[in-house]
Amino acid sequence: MKTAVAPLAHEIPPSALDDVVAQLNDVFIEKGTPMFMRTVLALFSGGFATFALLYCVQPMMPVLSHEYGINAAQSSLILSVATAMLAIGLLITGPISDAFGRKPVMVFALFSAAAFTLLSAMMPTWEGVLITRALVGLSLSGLAAVAMTYLSEEIHPQHIGLAMGLYIGGNAIGGMSGRLISGVLIDFVSWHTAMLVIGALALVAAMVFVKILPESRNFRPRAMNPRSLLDGFTMHFRDAGLPWLFLEAFLLMGSFVTLFNYIGYRLLADPYNMNQAVVGLLSIVYLSGIYSSAQIGALADRLGRRKVLWAVIVLMLAGIALTMLEPIAFVVIGMLLFTFGFFGAHSVASSWIGRRATKAKGQASSLYLFSYYAGSSVAGTLGGVFWHLAGWNGIGLFIGGLLVVALLVALHLAKLPVLPGNSKNA
Image 1 (spheres, rainbow, N blue to C red):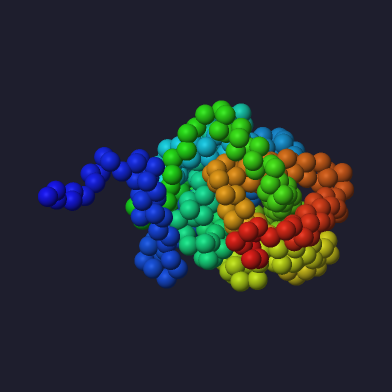
Image 2 (image 1 turned 180 degrees about the horizontal axis):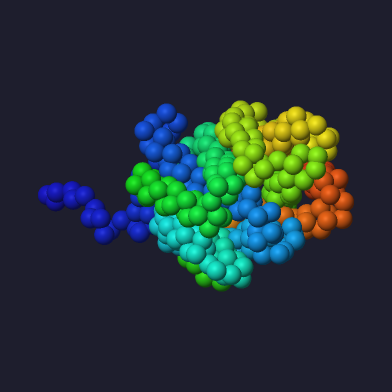
């Protein structure tokens, strides 16, 4: 009589083993757990550093115009070259993270960007500053491309909107802090010193990030070769919704950066004649974005993204309309509404990417953010032409045009057929 012997591990088909491993590893991070808190705090720190490093230069633009004898559009290059290189880098770093992992790419990106910021503060020429700013943008593409993908893979689908909103809240605080710190400091110290301070803060944020971010549990390596990249690109652009979300990113970010690029020039001139410190303090309007990114993201989880996106774009239109009025109270309220609407809209659109993209999510996030930062670079500099032609009226007309198109895109997205398994969110 033979005794039954359990099959050896090597007798199990490799495909079955892969399925078992995938099921064991496919564990989502739930809201309310310590791991959820670690994740959102780490990504909050990463978002803080990204936006602080990128946008700390906006309040400096009038100072740079004076120091280097350049006009507003030329001065805007200190931001535009960074966002342009960030956009280009996104096409590379997203697929790299698909092959090698999320956390290592993000950690390298943060430390590199902080180091190049410190180096930019020491550059003696305008050309040197632009080169190091380009390297800052290229470095940050490693975090910007991967953070959204990390969240969509690791966070439970029911809580992605909230988690994405908290990450974008970190972006808002970073953008506010970068502008606020540099805007106030350059009234008392050189812009070089202000850049050194921002770079040091970014190093601290990077150290917090590497220490507390959990390792990926649901990451599946994907071969990085030209054919797979082309297949992913084709797949995403054949989707009924993703290309429209890419366009939405371009329009939303283009309008947002244009406003903050040139509002300083307006407020420093007649009839306001504010000083740099006061203009920098107006960056507190970002607080409305910190609130809206999480709240609107959670609202979209409940009501559906297609019902929320168009409404917050209408708020942005109302905000830019108010800034066209002369009383400073209306200008500030308009900036508040505009910022509230922008971060809410970005939270909704970016979390929508993770729901629609079923494969090659890193590449989908990269394409969204490529469009996002391309909008920052192209529209942010093009706005300078409208400023020189017609002042703030020209800026208002330009931003208003971008937002009308964004609203039409959002209304189109709201009419798309619902994907199987997604009752209202994709």
